[in-house]
Image 1 (spheres, one colour):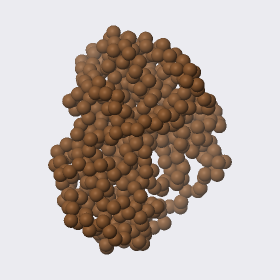
Image 2 (image 1 turned 30 degrees about the vertical axis):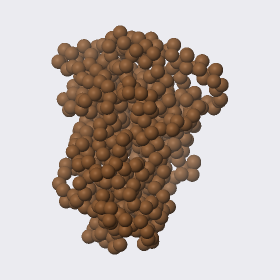
Image 3 (image 1 turned 90 degrees about the vertical axis):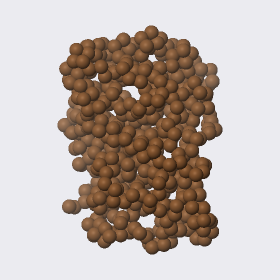
Length: 586
């Protein structure tokens, strides 16, 4: 079932915005030559008209250009009319998007009142019960025919009303049918969306936007690259816009780092026409992060063009760490060693003492004796690396290219056995806005690590050495390279949420954050719960108002626990599964 694909971009070391068709959504346009559109989602109950209006106005005032609202039932969908009319009375024309899961009848109602419908291919007509079975070709075709019969009425209504549709695949909610044929893979995510797109195209409906969201930035990046490459191969009229998002990114620095790695790396490659940063925080707090991410595009677009095109020194569709050999120092760098954390030499001793007996110790002081600093376009210096034992190589300061591009150039032009030290900036000491600095470091270093490039990282944009060290480890954790604490998959709140996500996530993090290597999912409802928790060790999922279900992996093991008891019950479950260790003494 695999398809051989050409590259997702023409040159991985040169910025070029992907060409996409225009899709009007109310008063705005997604795609074409328009700037990246920033959107968010309401956390208020859809039946609480006044709360929804108030939150939508706050978002619009903060710079949000598109507002999404969940419509889990027909009743909720019908209330979108009241929300739309109330916003109009207050002279707010921000386009509204209805978020639909499970209920085609809710979609049909919502489509009468909004500017765009988001459907999830995994649960609009198919169902997800984690059933394992084989489909004959006839059974599979019959299931697709049933899907078409359920979906066509919505497509026709969208055409009649002139509204748009996002076909939004989630890694955590692929249907059993797709899972059994393609597996829980980026390929399955793409094929799931294409089934719905083909139905749209049959009717001549082209106001389509795609998304391929996942909580794991590596999977998300791979899925979007595969989507774009597949659309290119299908033909020039498949140039639909793309919505970017890391779903269930979490909160605080962790949520911002994950979002910058996934969204930022794709934007830097010219992919993405609209973005949503999904934080487990008040929705208005997502908007400054999205604006800052969008602003990071300028250095890529304005960078000089490299002298020569390079071939991608990584597989864009399947993660594989670059096969370097160890640089024999203490500690070793490269080969099968973990990605090391370097700090400026003048801070090394102090940080080593401050973080002694912790998981976040500095491992290299920079400058490192014996490191080779090169211009990635200096053929003479590069030629000197063609022979000899492994050396730790990095890009020389002052390089005119963004680090993401410069280190791709370096990886393509030096023998693979040399390990690489990544830098987040080639202009040390440059003053930048703290949020932009954090996001840029995560984009540059995290994007390269998700390419499989990098054996050590040096973060210099953050002036505070302790914060820089912590951020370095957070980037390594977000990209799946190091684990020094519990990993949390926490969804942003919305009208489907059955408990206070922010307060609950904070309580769970405080109780379990020290559990190195344990992954815990905190999900407000069942929509993406079991699926997004597929690679989590434990899950805490809203099952009913005031009630919580606990999972081990994707299997529910405790049901309808009172919310006030559920965090303690989760800790007990972790102990019962042998994953508990006492928190370190402070």
